[in-house]
Image (cartoon, rainbow, N blue to C red; front, side):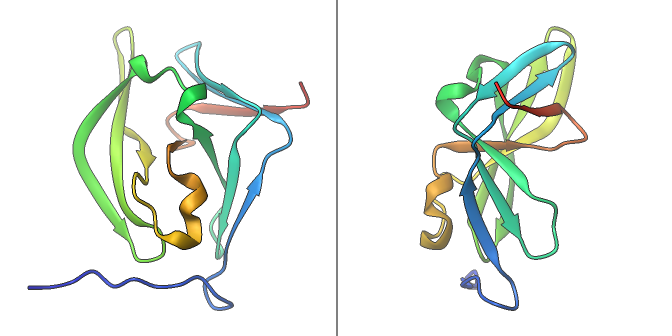
Length: 125
C-alpha cells in the first residue's frame, strides 16, 4: 500500500497566500458565476498566481461535481467540478481542496477556476 507524500512549502517550493484587496469576477458564456472581494491569491513556486473564491461568492448551481481528482503533496487532494451555463459545459474547469494541508488551510471552502476555461477579471470596485 502506497501512502501519499506530504511536503511543507519552503525556500525550494514556496507557497504564499494573500487576501485580494480588489473585486475579482469569473465569467462563462457571458454569465458571471463568481463575484468576490474576498478572494485569496495563492502563489506557488514558479506557477502563475491563482485566485481562490469563497464558495459563498460562487454560483454553485452552475457547478457539477465530477469524479476527477488530483493530488498535490503541498496542498492535498483536489476535487473537481464542471461548469454548466446553458448548453455550454466546461469539464473539470474548477478545483477545490476540501481538506487542505495546514500550510494552505485558508483555502478550505474556496474554489479556483482554470483561466483557459473562464474569464477572470480584477477591478477596483
